[in-house]
Image (tube, one colour):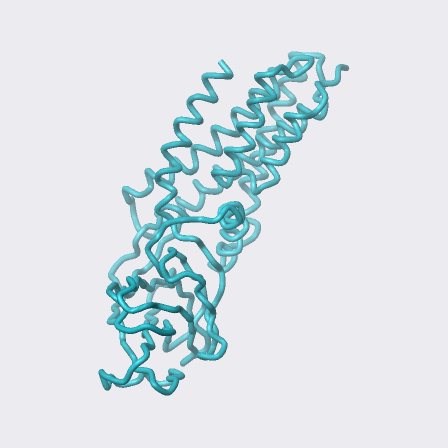
Length: 331
């Protein structure tokens, strides 16, 4: 039974890994307020999503990138705020177009402005990875005309939140992947969500844990030792992660309406829920000393928790602790 649980989770996880490769690296980093203080995009090809805020009326956000001639330039600008219309401009080395400089832009000597046409969409689109409802404003794709330093500039007539996507290569460093749960939590606060909303799903996870322990206590004289408590705690945090994804999906779909991308979000929610259920099963079935299968199962659950951002890092740590812990105590 336990091996079957692991096989199902591993197969679903493999499918989800392939889907997850299409996500941007999320970075909560507003652009600088001038060319000199521009936020640096470290890799023009790597796919990033920069979550920022256009300042007071006329406020700007500056992002600095380096391109060689012929490099692919990929930019898109969106916002979670309905009715907010920011503008994306690209400062390019050269003096050829003679295009009018938008008011307030800090244009360095020897640069020209390439405006990116944008418009306020009629409805929001659904982003399945975060998940979030976004209004897509503008985009630009094409080869870089010259070697040099470029600046992506976001201007806005009023204050609002912006999401600038850069690059096209969907890849993550290990540190970026592991840090996504923390970065996404910061992005939720940036969206204006209440911290209480982010905590509720984990509270539900611990309520489920408490119910299972209460029922197990009625049926058995065993009381959890380090293995049981750690495994159950990991399960509660994993379940909380899955419920939080479902809650965020519901919030986003309430704005966009149903979207086929929600199917992908359901996979991302289902993986932590399945891992949490597995942790509960292994913990409660380890009657006496946990066997080899329970310990290996916990290690697999810990690894998959890191891969799929379940348990906000604490859950995988608890699963590892369970895998190496002494057995159940007895009453």
